[in-house]
Image 1 (cartoon, rainbow, N blue to C red):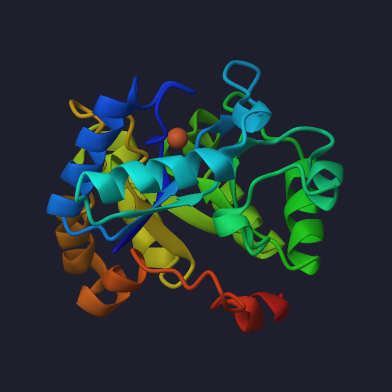
Image 2: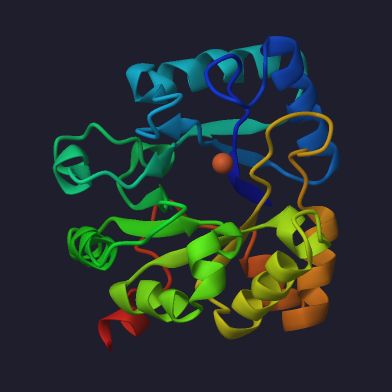
Length: 244
Ligand SMILES: [Fe+2]
């Protein structure tokens, strides 16, 4: 399994507090069956702004620490990128960290209070430039919860969706759980399950429990696809999306 959304890099955002905690998170992930984690610290969110760090370099250092400790986990660079007015320019200038630095996938965090029309244009523009936006946990977004047609708009624009494992297990309440289930059922092949892990307590980097629930909803094969991603190839939905 790959976990495409996890705040595992130590000491740079509201995720792992220090290296010791990050290593504990890594051990928890491995025990849960995760082989690869995309480290996704907050960028351009006005609070943590981890884009100022060398995320690729920090991942390399962390992978060395994992190897030294005998933890069989690979950590790839990524980021949880808040939508900003100049996002397209930032991506074009190579200032946004994409999954594995390969420009294929970008984890996009939507604004919480209001989602402007521009979001759809940005997603479409990036997709046409071969960078697929994966929208982070739309089921937890207040605006999306109140206007479900936003999901259709995101998909139509070319986005994929990342549902958080804890949303499926009920960690964020009934309303969020219901929308998570609905997304999984209606957007098979367009969505991923990820932990959005932050620590070793409540928000652990685990997927297995949610994967079992997802398997009951959509079947084992479709659920397994939700914890897999091929970062080296053109993504799996380009043909479907081009039909819109
Ligand atoms: Fe996150």
